[in-house]
Length: 203
Image (cartoon, rainbow, N blue to C red; front, side, top):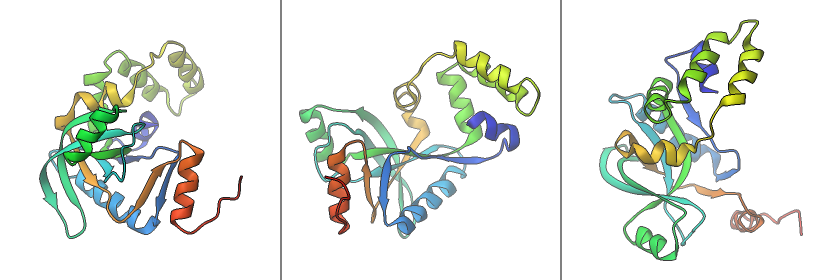
């Protein structure tokens, strides 16, 4: 997707949304996303993640250890990132929660050019393939090139392969005033629906 955006607007700012999340209310969520976009566009460019204050020891989520406050508005605070903790055990999650860590939503705002630069830094074996695609977008060979690069494209993890390697390039904004959940299990769906006064339409 970044390659296609880059072909049309290399100066773009992008927001990455995981597809299985629940947020409520939407208006407040969009306010924070807009602030994250504004933050991502300020030099020096950094990647801006949204974090959520934990209400329990969730072991299936990634966690972020925030650092010092870098900037603050009336309703949002931008903090540096000290470290990431991916799917911790009980003891690790307990320590993280006690130290003020937040859940990592993986909702990310960034300048496209910054992500592209970090791609070259962290995934140098992949980026020539994306560069090849960029040159073919809009031309008669686009489909052929797309098929060809995916035949040889290595598999990499975006969190551990990029985000965790460059915490100094990251910031985090705590997502306050919003109910957020990763709807990875039926139990989380039921829990969230009940919190907002809705009855699940399934057993």
